[in-house]
Image 1 (tube, rainbow, N blue to C red):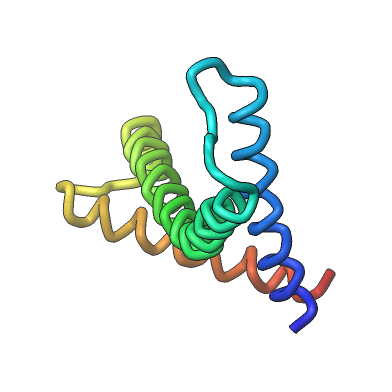
Image 2: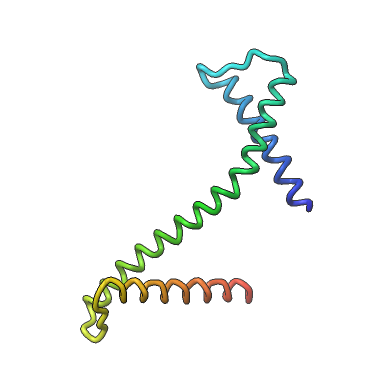
Length: 116
């Protein structure tokens, strides 16, 4: 609960601080209203930051999975080419192999974190 309150407060302060810095130091940005209106605008920005941050975390997680998959795809394909003993015939078996390696890697990584 304390972490959630801290996140809310920091997001609101980030909205206020970022907007204030922009109005003071970035040419072409100004705010002509009252300080109450400024706080309201900054508060709305802070609330939007609270909502967007988890979405960006999810998006970055998905992007990491895609990049990891692409790298594994290339590595497994390269291993298939480099080692005549390894035979992966076709893209579908290659994709399933990459998925298997990726899942095992993620599970072992998660298990390793719990033991530390």
